[in-house]
Image (cartoon, rainbow, N blue to C red):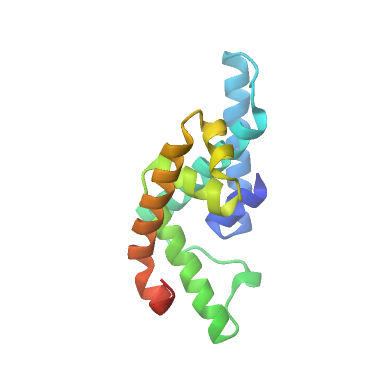
Length: 150
């Protein structure tokens, strides 16, 4: 869960906050409902959603996050990838929840389309369509950072 949250938020402090949020939600859920059937899937999805919430709230507050020193650019290539990572986070925050979740599961967590379909209880075709549309949307938003690589 920490890795998932860290990949989305880009900093360890926010990832730790995401973990606390998820565990609090799980604790509250545990008191009011039956045990989770697919706890790994629930935790992964909850971490993605909470991390996206952190990014969205960061944008709403117009605050500037203090990046981890390990992520600070030291060379032009690293500066370029750092800027791309920040832009990807902002673009993902503008996505609707389901496409953002599926994109994170597919490209940040490395799950296959069939795995995502099973985890979310939707068809593989639906996953493929959402992945395609989300990639097109993100590619358009990130075009200034991608240049000829898009």
